[in-house]
Image 1 (cartoon, rainbow, N blue to C red):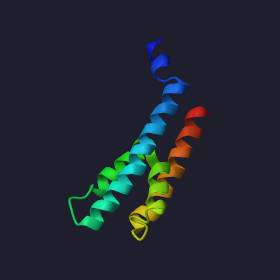
Image 2 (cartoon, helix red, strand yellow; image 1 turned 90 degrees about the vertical axis):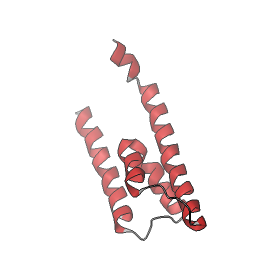
Image 3 (tube, rainbow, N blue to C red; image 1 turned 135 degrees about the vertical axis):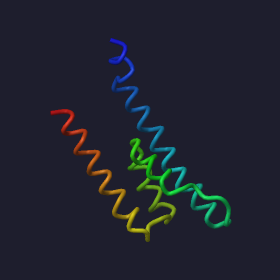
Length: 94
């Protein structure tokens, strides 16, 4: 019963909104740090946010801030990750 309450649709939606905002803002922060020449957010961390459910926020942030859009690891990897996540959700629902 407790797991059902923790993993309610409402909580899942809140989680996805928060992780996508984090992923989106991390692209903005990393872009600004790149311009200033200061410490950067590691690429693995940017991908971790996407893997944790923030793929849409990462993709929107990439193209909004024109950040990492020339790196195949990102412009190919993020959409592939999104498709894999969608397939996983569909498989889980069946």
